[in-house]
Amino acid sequence: MGAMSVGHWVIVLIVVAIVFGPKRLGSLGQGLGEGIRGLKDGLAGRGEEDQAASGQSQASAQAGRVADSPVDRS
Image (cartoon, rainbow, N blue to C red; front, side, top):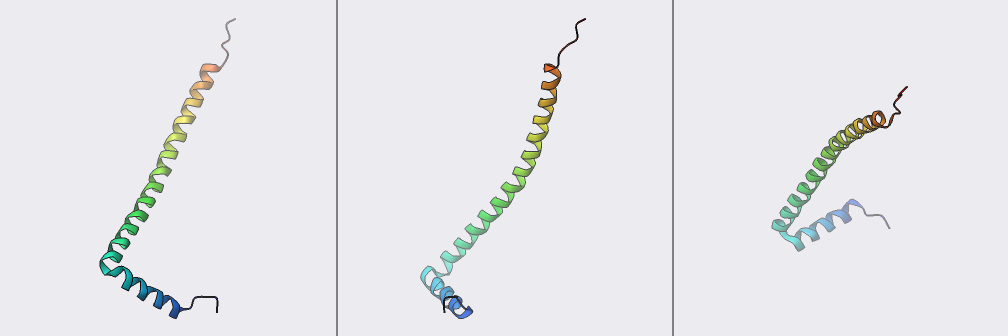
């Protein structure tokens, strides 16, 4: 009794379609699709930026080690 069956979901979808109408549902679907696409693009770009940033930080860390190393002036 507490779980939603397929019949319940069909009724909910029909009510939502009547309340919002096909035009608004289309624009909501389009906006949702664009949002998901933007999220996927952002995550893919973030991974590339993270790799580039870690490469730069490793290079600067190595340069810092060379600059901080003691010089033997005997």
